[in-house]
Length: 478
Image 1 (cartoon, one colour):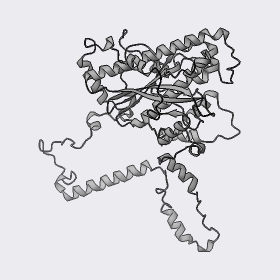
Image 2 (cartoon, one colour; image 1 turned 120 degrees about the horizontal axis):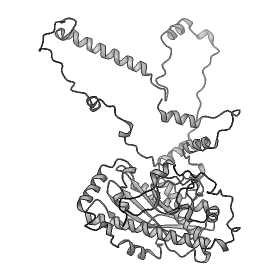
Image 3 (cartoon, helix red, strand yellow; image 1 turned 180 degrees about the horizontal axis):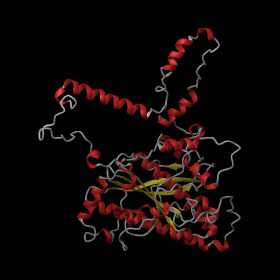
Image 4 (cartoon, helix red, strand yellow; image 1 turned 90 degrees about the vertical axis):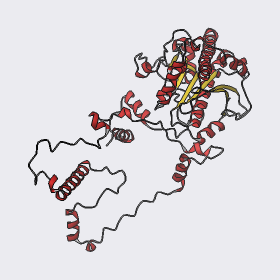
C-alpha cells in the first residue's frame, strides 16, 4: 500500500475510548492532515447554485439513497451441495479482484509475468531450433556476438531508477470553483469589475507603479538576463518554480511562502477552507506592540508561530503551466479581503473616525506561467450596507503586464511589482507606528476577546518553513 494511502487510513481511524489522550503536537498534526469538508450550510446559503463537481457530489449525497444489499438466506442448508462447495474451496474460493480498492497481489502478478515470459521464450526457441542453446550448444568464436538491447528505457541505459522528484505534482484546487466565488460575493467580498466602487487613491497608486527603477535599467538588467528569465519561465513545472527572484526584486522583506492562515478568524461562516497564499509580505512581530497583537491577533497574525510575519497586506498567487487563471483570481480575491480586514481593524484601533476613508492599503498580484501575464490589484473596504456584517471588500485591477513578451514589457511589469511591494510596506509600517503610539492611552477593555495570544506560542527560530520562506534577493540596492 502506498505511503499516502496508509497515512490517510491512520488519520481517519477512530481511537478507542480507553486509550490515553494524544499529546498536543500529535493531535494538532492529525487535525492538519484532515481535508476540509464543505458543510451543508455552504450550499444552503448560496444565492446562486453553480453546476460544479462539488455541487453534483452534494446533490448525490442528498438524493441518492444508500441501499444496503439484502443478505442471503442461509437457513436452507438442504439446498447446499457440500461436495461442490468443497471442490470450489479447494480451487481457491471466490475471486476478490472485482472488489473496489482490493490490492492486487504482487507475487501473483510477478509469477504470471514470469510464466508468460517463459512460455513465450520456449515457443520461440521451439520454432527456431538454431537459436535454441540447448539444441545448438556449440559456440563459434566471433559468430555469436551479444546483441545490445534495443528497447531499453532511459533508466535502464543509465542504470538509475526514476526518482519521485522527477514527477510533477499538481495542486488540487477543487475548493476554488464558481460556488466558492459566489459564496464570497454573498458575504460582501466582490471580485474585480463586479461593481463600480473603486478606491480613492487608485490614480495615486498607478502613478507610483509607473516609476522607473535603477535595478531594471539597461546597464543592470540586460537582454541576456531577460532571455534567462524566459527560459526559466518556460521550463517551470510547478507553482514553486514559477515566481523567480528576477521578478520580485532585490529589497529585503519579511516574506513567507505557502503558509496557511490558520490563526485568522473566518472571513465568512467557516464553510470555506483557510487561505494559503503562495507568497505574502508582512512585518516582523516585534514591530507591533504585544498588547495590539493580543487583542487583534485573530485579524493581523496569520499563524500561531511567533516568528511569522504579521499584518499581511501584499500577496502573490501563481499558477504553473496547467494552472487555472480563474482559480488564481479567486485565491487573490480571498487573500486580499483577509489583508484588508486586518488593516481595517488596525485603522479602527488608531482612529475610528477616519477608518472608512475608502483608500486601498492592500495589494495583490497574480502570475500565470503559461501566458506570462502579471496582474496587479488593489483591495479596499467600505462600510457594509448589510446589517449582518461590518465591512464590504472590493477588488480593483490596476494593470496587466505580458512579462515574457519583450524586455520593455518585463521592465514595466517588474518595476510595477516591486513598487507595489514598497508601497504596501510603507502603508503597513505607517499604520503600525500609529497604532503603537496609541497603546499608552488606549482602552483595551473595548477590544477584549478570548483569542489566544501569539506571545505564548512556540518561538522556534529554526522552523523548517521559516528558513525556506524568508526571501532575500541578490541585489542589495534597488
